[in-house]
Image (cartoon, rainbow over all chains, first blue to last red; front, side, top):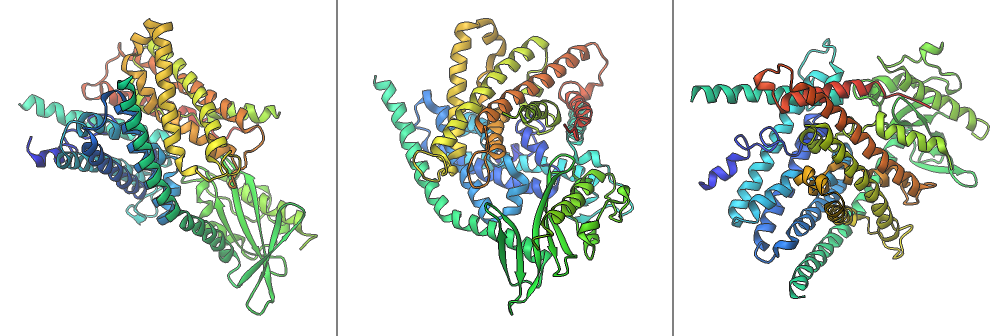
Length: 200
Length: 176
Length: 209
């Protein structure tokens, strides 16, 4: 695969959330506002990038038997770094993301990419893969968050989009709204995929 | 034996390296984090009693009951106390600033986890502003016969804020 | 011992703040394993066990090694929390896997890859961290009976997880006989069902004792 495709595959074709159904917990939980979505996406992309690069660098030194604990150690270290840095420099974002910052360590996307890609490929490609998957993840959360925030509050990033007379659909920012939004979006995606398949 | 030593050694090395890096970053960020916490507390106090320059805590045997606020000339400009009551789905913690005449100067909700879009709006200015100038001894939600307008669809949260202020004030009134 | 507090923790973790459809923890197995009742029930039992054991072990590690106020070292090592917790959970799951393989090989086969995946189940790490946040005060001292409360919260969270997992499996088994639009088959309709369940469980919020 050409190098640039390593990057773009994570964004659409193999989007970790909509196509591979990974990383669902943080996606639904932080998509109550676009600001949280961007914050979580950035944090997860950072961890994914660093862990992919690091694991790709040391892949020849890790004995196969203990590779999962090693990956977990590396990922958990980067997650702890992100946690501390966020608490020091962006405390309000750290508070809104709450428990989901340390939960980045069990985000299936990061462990999955470490196991499936970084442990078998060079540093440059692993970097592109990590960046692409991370951005795809962030894009997915932002899409869901935009829908939920517009319907549930009427704003995006605190910029009022819908007129003030709009009575917000509160359920959109409550848990049911998250599930229904992602269900409908996945269904929509399937419609496009099926149309493409029937054309081909 | 050999194929047990190598994996254990690798794990140990990674543990030590990561431990060292994390300890370093912790030392760098810990003072900032502590500072942020202090700043947040201060910010809440300054919000409800803007004229105060410094605060003196008044405690009984174990805990701080309230703070007296003084300006630069050491004149008393008011009091600050915090109160908490369980609302709809969480404890709602409010900080209240009082004038020297024991009327509410301003309030601010510092922590809550109520329903977003409904009870969570108790942190908004257009809700908390209505408490300014009221007598904390006699505030009740409109549904209970008072004049505090409750949030749309969030009477319970409104009640938690209002009743917490009134009840805590009544407890502290003799000491103020 | 204040039984009403414990009761509140139990009801709270199972119904009011259900870990899956209110806190969004444990979604991957919820959507992935809930295709039939037997494997859902087996998975649920495994998760209850892991969550209870994990709550116990992580509480002990936090109290005696990491938390400055109570640790035997007297150092503030709370920043090692994430690493220590996830590693102990990984070891615990490995251990559980070995035990199930010996004691119940049919269950082991039925769960397949989903058993080691309990390590990455957000609910397990989530409840461990939640126990610390709920039952330790800001200065690090534990509230009264925080050990018992943590274990109970861990177990109840697992029960809540099992409850919605089994409910979902039951619905999905029935769904096999319904006419689902082609593009909604599989994951989309499962999410819509989860949304309806979340809507129903919203009715529990605001319950007071």
